[in-house]
Length: 136
Image (cartoon, rainbow, N blue to C red; front, top):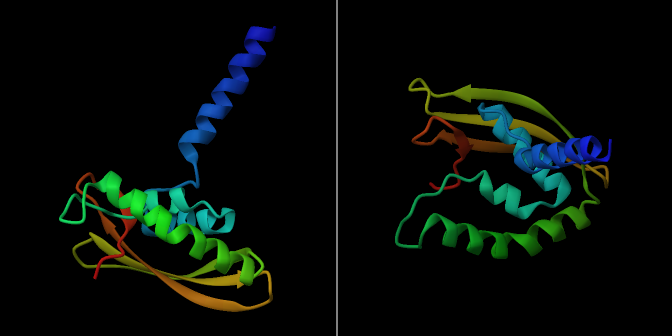
């Protein structure tokens, strides 16, 4: 009985680890996962959603490490100042004719009562997975 219970707990822990902030392979799914990371203050999860390639700035791993360090305190300050991200609703999703880029717009509702709109630019990576596109 103990083995079965331990096995179930381990299975749920592994499933939770893989899900992280969650992400469906759609532009809106990526925006949803991004907002869940912001809501939780999960900078690493947020950075994992960003499309990066090895370049003169370093390897993908190095770039992710730098972004986590850069964004961690900024994300925390914003979340604290606005008293947390309470909820959101998606306003639109526009996919390019080529089908490899999309823009998702969401309305954000903050704990301090303020609201704003945020757009998320997304791009398909080499494997067909939708990611945040933060490059210009």
